[in-house]
Figure 1 (cartoon, rainbow, N blue to C red):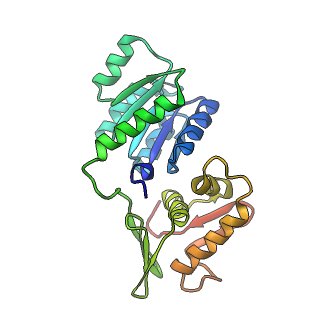
Figure 2 (figure 1 turned 135 degrees about the vertical axis):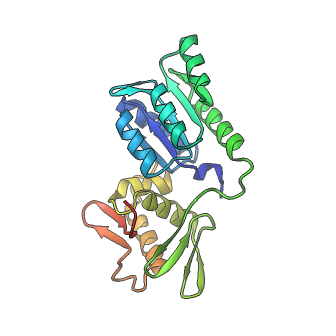
Figure 3 (figure 1 turned 180 degrees about the horizontal axis):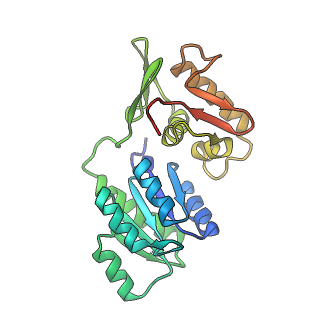
Length: 237
């Protein structure tokens, strides 16, 4: 398992097409734990609820600016930050880097340049950490350790496959919320995920066999008809 690709990324930009394009670029490079925000307010909520491992910020936001957002992030955590913005003036770069940003990429940009810089930051920041800071959590019938990619139930250890791990990770990141079928397919199979709905159902069934006491009547991994699935974890917002 590529530990770098398991890192959680927060993209913040108020241009929907740009967000979609950058997310596609990152998924093609192997990243799958990606959250997006279009405003300063949305970004702060995402950071407080589920702290990402790195943030990619635009400078210009409708309800604030990326520099102020960086200041707020640094009050909560020392995660790396990369600016991706049309503001290419030298003064802006100096301000961003001076506030603690790890890199500053100006639009328009080459996709390969972005992924190379992102991977370099992640490797540099987390090189001394042998295990990705993925969580362990309890469900009524088992313990799930995402760092070790395994489920412990009734004294037995059940390893998670790469696809099961990707699906459970995105469900955990959005615990107690509905995750659409399309989002789960993208997490497991990337941008070329069209037509994988039936395959997803197979993986969901196998996950339930590992985490549920009665897979046919699940209480933790719930189907939300017509939308997707929800991982129920008590105590999570």
